[in-house]
Length: 268
Image: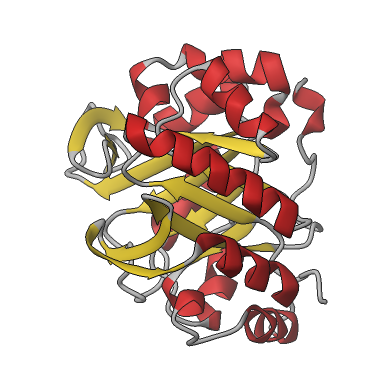
C-alpha cells in the first residue's frame, strides 16, 4: 500500500492545484475563512481549469452539513464527467463509507481534516481500504507561541479554523504519514486569502519532517509565490484559489513563469 508514494520529489514536476470551496453546490471564496461570497458554478469552473492545464483540482464542501452532502455528491459526479485529471474532495468526510461514496462518485482522492484529528484511525482505515494514494490529510494551521506542547510554534486547528487542538503541526504531520496518508495539504490560516505569499517556514518544516508529498496552501498572490512554495518551501504542489478565480492570472501564465524560473512543470 505504501509503495505508491513518490520516492524522490526533487525531479518530479511541480503541480498547480486550483482549490474550489463549495457551499450549497456553489463556488465560494473568503479571506482567513471569513466573509465568503458566491463566485460561480463549480463544475464550469473545474472544466475551465482542466482545459487550462491544471494538474489536479481540489473541492472542499466548506459547510459539510448533512443536507448539503447529497447536493455535493451530485457536484462530484458532474465534475468527474467534465474533467480528466485527478481531483480530491474534502469536507465532512468522517468514515470509510463517506470516503467510498465520494470515490464512487468519481473523485480520485479524499481529503480528511477535522475528523482525522478527532479519530486518527480514520487515516489508517482509509489507506487500508483504498490505498495511501487516495488519502490526503488537510491540515489547517495557525501560528502559536512556542511551548513544550507546541515546539514548532504551529498549532493544528479544526472546524474551519474555529477550534484549537493543542496539537503541534509537525508532530501531527509525522503521525499522519505513519498512519498511511499519501499526501498532506498544509493550509496556513494566517496566510489564507491574503495574497501575501505562502507560509514558507511552516511549509518547509512539514516538508522536511515527512517523505510524502506536501501541498502548500493559503496566500498565493502571484507566480513568484508559487515558485517560492516549491523551492524555498519544499512543497510538491501549490494550491491556488483567489488568483485564478478572479482572473488575475491564468494557469498557463503561472506555469510559464514557473518554467522560466527553472521549476519543472507539466506544460500544456
